[in-house]
Image 1 (tube, rainbow, N blue to C red):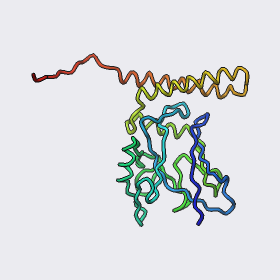
Image 2: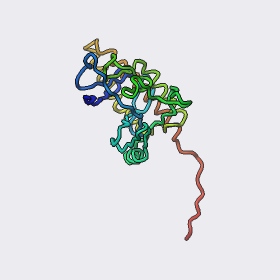
Image 3: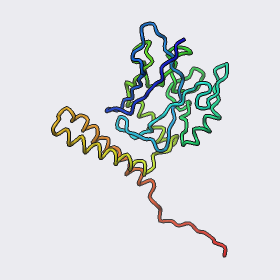
Length: 227
């Protein structure tokens, strides 16, 4: 059985879409690629703007025996005890499957979808580029972003810290200024300049929100100090 190609996920593209690419191009006719189950993970320092919302820039934890301290049983069960400890050391946390939008067929919830039983899995918002191809796209990034943002707003994922949003604003401001300047001489860059300006606006609104939630109060704390 040929080994499935490693997946490579790009940064969010203009408009908010993610595209995962393999190194070998489209799969040949009749090929049955394998795409393993992956948990979504988040990190407090990794955020981005997708479809007009500030959301975690998620990573993926492949559920493969021996990879990233994941242990699997013969019956398909998965133990994440050691994987969670390893992720925590680097600041990462998993997004629990039960927060997903799909029924798992056993009365629970999930965000992993089984495309080819036992062989090919993707997330709820992803679809294969074409049948028999290991690549996936997110055709509706707005739905993906809305789900992630709801996890933040509902308290399942801690929101971005002010210093993180400030860093993103600095990057977005530089990008927006450069694209606005270039669009004056290259009209085809105007859509990209508009996306950059909107991204900056969204981040500035987020900073006003997180800044208001972290302002110090006027109340002091009593403290008894022993001489």
